[in-house]
Length: 111
Length: 121
Image 1: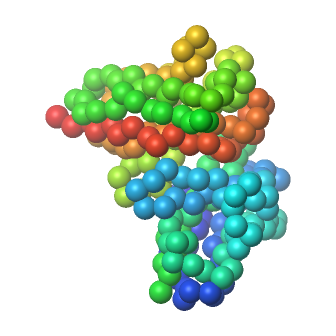
Image 2: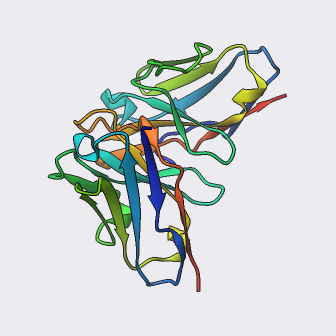
């Protein structure tokens, strides 16, 4: 049971837009801690995709965007491409646990 | 080339110990906070521990407190994770990951490729 809740899977056709939700609580996202997103392609290490809720590191396509509300965050992928098939994880800090917490991960499938 | 390379994984019996290494290249480890994160086979990511840039502060997830110890050798630009009293539940791919700034920002801008630890009799 992960502290942050993500849907196990989402899917979409090439070119479509998909969103992944990440729901937290008052001790993490709701406490104002930033949300970060990672992409893990099959058989590889995670890669930082979005930092501090909505910032894209250099080299990340602008098809990826992040947003945050009170106790949740979302990752949107527009213009879905076959190469976007991967697992996506949200991550934040939890003050009750005094450490990093992750979502359970969402597998994105391109139909 | 800026990278992290983990090593030291392998097959170990329950109750035994193992020390993982994370060698940094292209940057100075002591200028960043650095974390250990693991991923059990087919499962999600689990944060384990962090050492602050100056080595003064170390934090652990509850499930490994008292069993795992994070440390570093600045002369070798290498981070370590000493793991004691291992159980089958510790079987995972272990990653080291860099915090993007010298202050602990609690996220990761650089990951190694991981080293696999299998705890089995």
